Image (cartoon, rainbow, N blue to C red; front, side, top):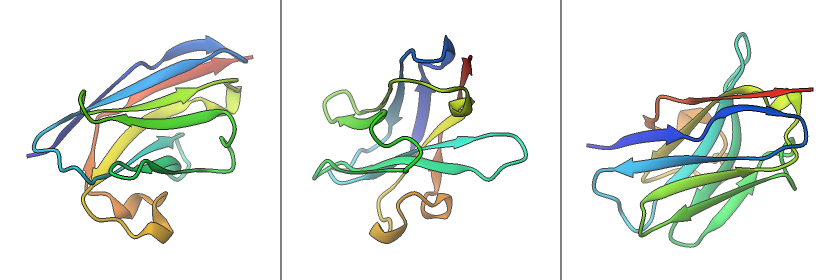
Length: 126
């Protein structure tokens, strides 16, 4: 059984940084697809960043490119999202997700993932 537990959210001012964590519980394969999504009420859940853990191959949405960095620590079995230069439009509930197989063409699409965490809130004020 897979369980994902996010942490690290909070309230910050624009321009500041936060680092989100997502601890993986279960039988972690060496090769996993993991991703961060965010959800603003009344909007679609948006893919933010994805990583293929065995190759550390990453992808970021255009809206966060150059500001957010996704990494995975195999020893800690933890996914991270370093968020720098935060903007008010980054305010959302952030979720991590994982699955053993994801179509590489659609790594930032929510339907690719079957396992989700409970979310952590990020609020950025101007």
